[in-house]
Length: 85
Image (tube, one colour):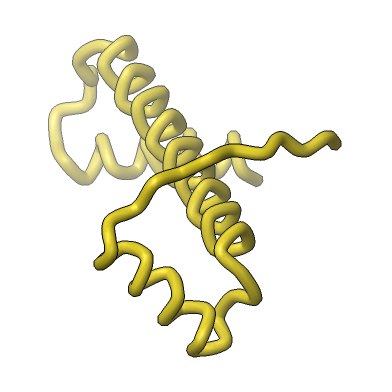
């Protein structure tokens, strides 16, 4: 995996925050902190995409033929268990 050098500009307050994270021993340098932020953003985005897909799947499935919440919930649990074992 190659690397690319980037130039980023921060406010004094942001720079102080990054330095405080390093001084507290959470990161060894600015780059490590920024890469961690990008990884967390990627993970959060993946969760968001999965949630959007699940919502769309629910919308696409149409109106339930079950008449009660308990019936709907039981069917949802059955489908979940079938998908996730």
